[in-house]
Image (cartoon, rainbow, N blue to C red; front, top):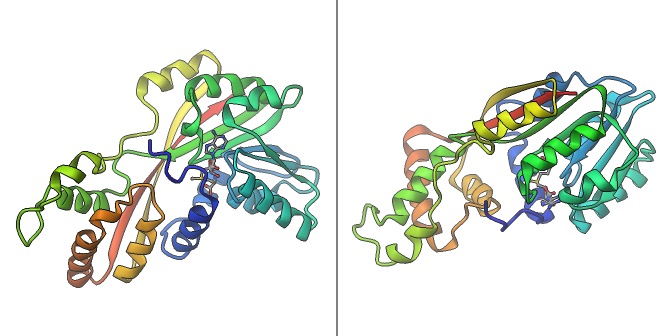
Length: 268
Ligand SMILES: C[S@@+](CC[C@H](N)C(=O)[O-])C[C@H]1O[C@@H](n2cnc3c(N)ncnc32)[C@H](O)[C@@H]1O
C-alpha cells in the first residue's frame, strides 16, 4: 500500500471533486442501504477524511442520533470541525486519532453502526483492529469496512504497466529499468479470505458485499487530473500514459475506469 496520499487532505478533495459526476453509482447510497442507517443511530466513521460520509449521513440519523468522525489527519479534522461549526451540526463530533489507537480512545462508548470507507487498511494491523472494534459495537450493531476490490482501476493500471515495461508505440523505453519495478500491480481485494475467516471469532455474521462502480471521463485532461491525485501516479510516466489514455478516448469517445468496492459487513 502506497503511503503517498494516505493523509493528504488536498489530494482527497481533488479526487472527491473528480469522482463526483463521473461515477455511475452513489457510494454513500450503497453504504446506507447495506447498513440500514436510521434515525437514532450512533455512528462511528473511521478514517472519515473530509467527512464525505459523515455529512452525507448526518441528516439520516436525526432525530436522536449522532456521528463521530475519526481521522489521524489534523487538516481533515480541522475541515470537518469548521463545517460542523458553520452548519451548526451539533450531533457530529470529530476526533483526531490514529486507527490503531481508536479502540482504546473510544473506551466506554458503543455505536450502532461503525463505518470505514477506503481507510481501514491504513491500520498497522487491520484484522486486530476489526476484531477490537467488536467491543465498540452495541448489541445488534453492524459494521461495514469498505475499500478497494480486485480489478479496481484496471483500465489505467494496464496502460501504466504497458508504458513502464517500455512497450510504447515508439519502441523501447530507455528508463524502463527505473520505472518497471515501481509500476502498479493489478489491484487485489484489500482483505484476504484467511483474514475474513478470522473475523468469525468476534462477529455473529461476516458477509462480503461488492459494488462495481464505473467512472466515465469525457476528456484526457479529466483522466490525467484524476490520476495525478491517485496513489498510482508516476510523474515520470505521465507523458506516455497520457498518450495511451488519449488513444482510448479517441477510439471510444471517453475513458471508463472500473472501481470495484469490497465491503466486509459484520454483525455484533
Ligand atoms: C482515502 S481517504 C478516505 C476518506 C473518506 N472515508 C472518504 O471515503 O472520502 C483515507 C483517510 O484515512 C485517513 N488515515 C490514513 N491513515 C490513518 C490512520 N493511521 N489513522 C486514522 N486515519 C488514517 C486519511 O487521513 C484519510 O482521511
